Length: 245
Image (cartoon, rainbow, N blue to C red):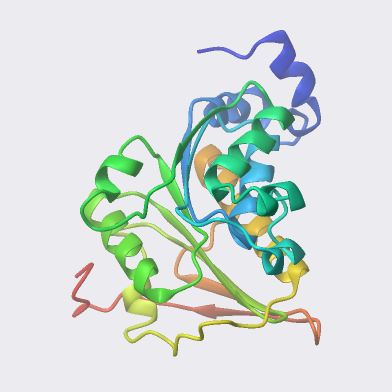
């Protein structure tokens, strides 16, 4: 695999970054990123991973957008709502028009314990763009079992959290959250919050895949956008964790 003349032109501004260069761009081109959930987090993350030149994306979502999604799920348009189109298909269509050099696969059925290995088998890293902890725990277990890094984010209102999980090296999601927070069927969310944390997830994925920058290993960033408060807390592995111990 090599960088084409088109690659060198398209990604010229990030290739200029110290420590990134052509080597970093080539690493992105050779990488496959799985995204579970094409909602507020997933649409933002997928756009910036596509913009950065990640070679292959696997988009998984069985849902279809409705009008209440359009304040934050930025690859879905009114047309997609009116025609009851699947979110993974809708997202793939927009991303393919944005960057035709990226290979994009989509999975439109519900991802569960029985099929998750097949869906994300090719992924080098997975981005958690879900909206509930039941599915997050399933994804966390799969990543620990298959030793795949996982970038996690969750959002609520103006608030969000972000961390990067590397099996056998960092706390897993079950270590950090031994019990799930209460599930709210319809929760408040500001579109910019989902957008920001989706972008931050893409940033963590890009850094990990290229080896550039500092990673959120055993650390979690918490941001309250309404108060402009940013905090970073330490996390640690639980030696008795039922998932990763």
